[in-house]
Length: 257
Ligand SMILES: Nc1ncnc2c1ncn2[C@@H]1O[C@H](COP(=O)(O)OP(=O)(O)OP(=O)(O)O)[C@@H](O)[C@H]1O
Ligand SMILES: [Mg+2]
Figure 1: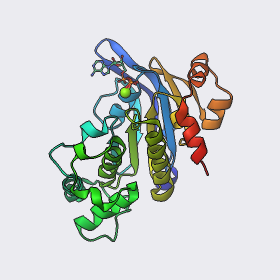
Figure 2: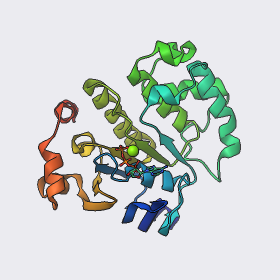
Figure 3: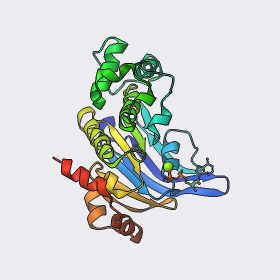
Figure 4: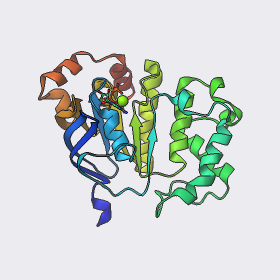
């Protein structure tokens, strides 16, 4: 019953940089089709967890069970993460042409039935809500929000089962943030993706995540459903975060169905 088991099962994870322990024992699961948020201040260890999940850092203790066939990461700096010398078409087609070879086992299958690489690139743009007009554009010719959509499309080219989004909206204007967060919500709904969404503030994750982990100095100080964490915060730190809810929450709330 592989389908029922979480795609990630993390138990008592510790990660050190030399003498400094950045992650001090966190446990969580990411269920199939779930969006899990990790929220906390700068330096609390959020990116370290993400990097350890994809193998860029090594756990010093604890276990990570990864049952996903493919895990892709979307980075905070969308413009910087794209190659400035490549058009959107070149960016997507490069990844698509390597995707089949890199994939472990079966894919999540949302590009299945599409024969050619240009057809797949067009489908990816459609999934992230961009028109085909951007295909011949370079990153410098696009807005921050468009670049973030392209970097999400690039991640989806491998048809991952899990998307890790490390502060995907921090560099964007509030109104654009809401649109990208709605896109993540649609990806979960339409493609069945499991998503780990990392953010600085709770407002960003509130309407997108099923569950939220609040992180402070290497530890989770609050874990629960989004509603629980918002309505019954367990720690002073979470209450402090809740006091600073910016406009994005209102923008999102206005767009909620
Ligand atoms: N490569 C590294 N070498 C040494 N220390 C590091 C390294 N990467 C991160 N750290 C330290 O580990 C701690 C956690 O960093 P991490 O990047 O995981 O935090 P974060 O929660 O993602 O912060 P931010 O919100 O600013 O992105 C910080 O004290 C940071 O300085
Ligand atoms: Mg970080």
